[in-house]
Image 1 (cartoon, rainbow, N blue to C red):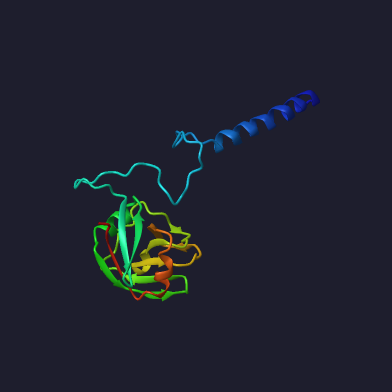
Image 2: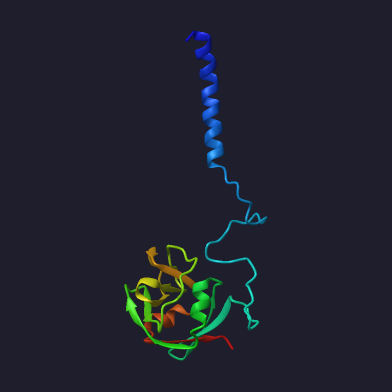
Length: 173
């Protein structure tokens, strides 16, 4: 090959590679929202869907720990909706890792469309699918595969949770 052709190829090849890289990494899906705020993995800004009974699927619930009522909200996930269908529940709690209280649920919950795992924070209500347990967090805990966040307790509820042996969960009045 003559030197003039090599110089021409040297200019064209990097441009072609750059074009290939840019188009391969492009996201051709439509934007999910026109909001300029960053998306939050823990909160949904979309309106909740309505069930045939007329209530929204995102649901306010009440936890009772040692006679103290604590407000909480379930998110709009299939797993949280399946959990809500079991309410009211009264469950015995056991401490796990000095960060959470766990309780066995009467039946397995749907994990349809659930993430692979979650990084629970103080106040989270979650479902640990491998053991079919409700997990309630009074301290932050590390990421766990098989954990699905169901909702969150209002501030102030975690003090009672740390010492409670039983929890009653029901739809908020």
